[in-house]
Length: 328
Image 1 (cartoon, rainbow, N blue to C red):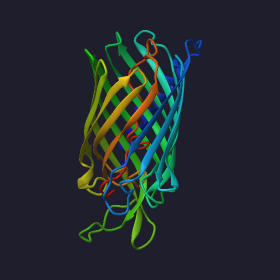
Image 2 (image 1 turned 135 degrees about the horizontal axis):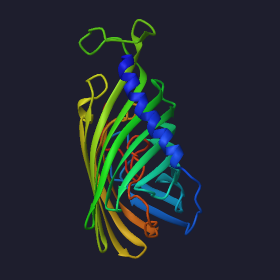
Image 3 (image 1 turned 180 degrees about the vertical axis):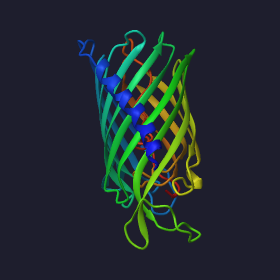
Image 4 (image 1 turned 120 degrees about the horizontal axis):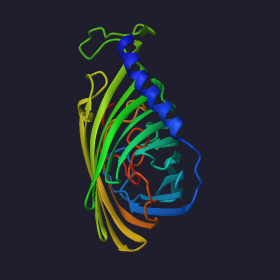
């Protein structure tokens, strides 16, 4: 990567992190709540090598929700016959300042495990800093920077992340748009599919080399709720050269619906396509889910920005499974 490009990438990241630390002034933690959720559903996949149709998924989720500090933990387990398999899991913590003069800062830390099958599984820790610009709780912008460290991924050691986003509320709908850039050094083949030599920063042997890799995701999300019904939908596009982005990960879309049968029970259904995560060595895939959710979530904390930490580069969605194996 050219030095001029690297300087351009680092300076905004440093500014965002510094501003976030300045704004993170200790605040009194009031109205904190501990809430929980449990999802149970059937996994219906007919693709060879993945879970059979008789499998069941259990996904517990516990969250401590305060005005400044938020801590959450979730996991997912699959049962097939008499055998249990621990699948995904994530522990997250975030510290957010109250909005002052339209500005708010947020620090986020995560530790996660992603499991597709016996081959495609790994762990990751990551940290992220955000600065939010909020307009009367009906819209806003943010800048973010972070770093991730995957484990059990032979080709990648660390990932630098930088991005920006915007959100607005229109009636019962929340619209979100994000741009996220990923940059990392990976071990790649020294030749492309045509046999031509690729540009490498360091040659490791005759067949592989260290290569600077980067790509960018643009994604739009819609969340809409009305009475007992909720809909979430997202679509995205990935920019990058063919060495970093495979054709099956250029574009994606997914949707889910929640129908509340009572104040604490709902039916959940969803599906779609998820792009590959080359930083974690996870392939692109199609997924679907159908289940029942038992939940006890409170109303949003007053003054909170209704934007969750970006999850697409951390772990896959809850209670989902691969229906088609994709490329990196």
